[in-house]
Amino acid sequence: MQTIPRARFPKILQIFRWAIDPVGYMQKNFSRCGDVFQSPVSWNSPEQYHLLSRPEDIQYMLTHDTGRELSAPGELNNIFESLIGRQNVILLSGKQHKKRRQLIMPPFHREHLEKYNQAIQEITYRDIAGWWVGDSLDVRTAMQRITLQVILKVVFGFHQGKRYQKLKQLLSLRLNMSSTPLTSLIIFFPWLQKDIGDWSIGGRIRQLAEETDELLFAEIEERRASAHAGRMDILSLLIAAKDEEGNHLSNQDLRDELLTLIVAGHETTATALTWAMYWIHALPEVKQKLLSELEAFSESVDAGKLLKLPYLTAVCNETLRIHPVAMLTFPRRVEVPLELSGYQFSPGDLLVGCIYLLHQREDLYAQPQQFRPERFLERQFSPYEFMPFGGGVRRCIGTALAQCEMKIVLGTILSNMQLSLTSACPVEPARRGVTLGQNAPVRVKTIEKYIPAHR
Ligand code: HEM
Image (cartoon, rainbow, N blue to C red):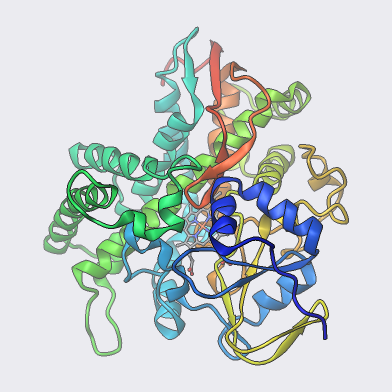
């Protein structure tokens, strides 16, 4: 049996490269080691992770991760703890994890989300109403405004008011603390987050967490006091939920879960939308094809119909293929001896699906560095060949929401605004926290807008 190749260089240098230049790190190791290689992922974790990028291996991992052969322990995701706490779906394991997913999944089902289509479009209209002709704007900032309002609507049932404004400000400050490759080092070397006074990074994280908690706990208390049946927002469902012994979730549990959904639910989609806006405006032929598809609409663009447009869907898929916002799945732990790609794995070994390398495979995607939405119209990819939302027991809860949101936001903007890219091309992928963001701001200038007068 062969030895599993491992990345060269001492652990500290590898984590540093993975934090600062994740794409270079993955590509280098793939060309040196092939489909499977060992790598450290965080300074705090003593174990090596095994990164998989062959669809067959990933399929095996994600179809056997319910506990007997492989498990998906939440404690392995503890690099997120300082941001979202411990009592949430990402950090829970086993039965508790399964129960929490069952509780929060219903509002994220595609049929249920239909009632948000209109709200997503209204939020987009309201935002672009403030983009003036001649103005140049930062696309990420605009996309973050939109996606935050959408997730607050789904989670709380509201997206306006003083509390929302304050929450928005605090979350942006917190997420921006690890928005560049260099500042992302605080995630991978957690001792950099040690609280040694108000002036330290740890101190700032604590202050922001305290202020955010105050807002979230106030909202939770008010909702408990005024709970009424029939509300389908997530906070109402979580407040009403009881376990087998009849216990309700504590305020701390609720706070951790709300924060998880808000953070996971807006930062990722904002990054994906920023990439989509970049590619559409960097490639005139892609923009032209999209506009031709959208022109089929007359005066008003119906949000529901946008979801069915084939080219728009292909553009969103190609965006998530070429720059998967999440480069890796969460780790899975081997529970019984097994063999993948000719390598032997033992109980305790940790496996991770490398979504980035999977999406860059030349045997699946010809000229993978090229943005070509047509590839999604020419053939169907299996869930283990195209996998931006992971799979198995931890498959992304927000898959349907992110997919609908991307199409409605892009379709509404393109049908109502003529924009041109003003950033220097090309914009390259770069780390933003745990996600794959942009190495430079994506900026567009408003050339013309045709928003119907009644809006
Ligand atoms: C383009 C946008 C998004 C991308 C690319 C994305 C990607 C992912 C990926 C790759 C995973 C890990 C799956 C695995 O390990 O197999 C995940 C998990 C998760 N995502 Fe997303 N996501 C997106 C949007 C959202 C949204 C809108 C929400 C809203 C609530 C969300 C909530 C979550 C949660 C809660 C988990 C953890 C699930 C669990 O541990 O059981 N995500 N996401």
